[in-house]
Image: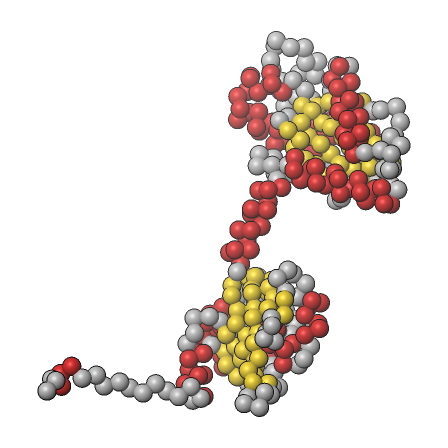
Length: 334
């Protein structure tokens, strides 16, 4: 006969319909979870939810105050919307991407939350699912949460790298090209002028040779700050390439662009960055810039490439005429 030493004594698993067991299981989940009843009162607020929000279960269970854990002012959670049959309000209350009703009646959304108790904003992904009784009636809603703040911040950093120049912090060439085409389309639609400045540091190679790459980099950063300080909120300054910068001035006439260009030229000159290379003639003895300007009234028979070409030609004239000056076309492009 088989030895009894190898016999197993299994403990029967709790029945799935055991409410106490289900509640205990949900409370111990590592995923932040809460459950609302038909009156939108909190039934379960698990330990992971306590850790995420800084709000103890005893403070919210039996109340409708769960929104206070996520926002400064009343905002219904996905569980509230589902329980109250207000799913049509989803896109208004959660305007950020990744909003999509699931096939099983669940709701999914992502949003920034204030998190008043912990004192830091967090980016949370939420999923709310209905719980039905045997007759199909909704008796509760369970909402789970995922803290995606680190991922969102990393995404923002990558987007910053994709559109910003690493040295100066200005918009990069890719961002400039995209913005210029967008502003051209808007100017064409609204029949407004669009101005462009091309700004080049005079004799920068000689400066870089005399001061080294670190000195040259510092020079470019200081000039970038000087140019940016003269901009309006809707203007864009970009590092166009090397020692050249570009400035997009929406709804700015040629006269207005000339005023901005002169302010930039003067501001850079007042930086008083010594230009000590004696092999070249540099009248001011300091770093200066030359600027070419162009303005177009967007029309079907003109193009953004023409605007860039005219600004480039104006910059070349400023260089040819002795540097440290601005050069304008004879008239706006029409």
